[in-house]
Length: 414
Image (cartoon, rainbow, N blue to C red):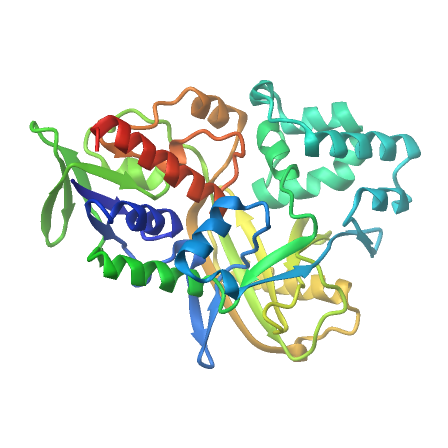
């Protein structure tokens, strides 16, 4: 079969790699490089990820892919931590016992929250949470003080608001079992991208960069037409590894799928001359002036003093002013983490920004996902697939890719 894949992020590349062994696959990518959110940039002869990417030993599908591609020996593991800036000081929250050191929570709130986190970690995903609001669910389980102090910062950081987010989404985030052991690849995600690219070239798969698909239509012969500036190509099926927003703009005669609101993401990458005194894969710092929470990764990557400052935007675009505000907030946060920090520590800084990177998992969207049709006569949309995890991680992308391939095999009997 002839298969078109729109988007050369991890999802698109893995689908292409797995399918190209038996089928003729073409990948279209509108930018000048592969990788999507896993792409990066060169600096001083080294490749640096635009965003910080970690994985855990529980990411089974990703570990298997590393082994299959022969790059598993380039994985390194490090013990790290999680912390929250509370009452002008860093509070370690790497294990449940750390809850009892939080002075601003009552013993009842601590016990309720500890019980909730333990039960949540080991309990199964419950579809009844699709109908619950995350804020109401946490307040009901842990109390309003614990919600405001511990959970609201996470939701504000990721979704900008808390009153419409699905409880299922929050449960999925809380069930991420990193166990404070995080994995990184030597050479960053570039190592994975190059390994996938080389396998695709070996399978004679075409990857067309700087190729923006203008429209996708379906003809009377049940074939898909992928239309570009250079002309049109005919395919048996299409896998659109792009946002539902972008996908909806491509299809002439939208098949009827629901389009979610999407988050955009920005990242300041700072190379420092000195190490920070706190090694955490996630650190939430409350910027009272801007009324937002920021996350700073302070874990040394590949023995380099590089820190990532990541922020998500909802219903807001990045302006030069906002870009500068985010940089100032990053510096303020680093100052809180290490009082000795000043901007002279910054050897190099770069800023990156991407649109429509992750659906906002509102109650409405999750309800639509749960009952959605996931394929349309040879059109497959990974972002429309419902999984209890409800997270857009690399490992989740691999799980969805495997499901898509299973459905192609069943629906096309190949």
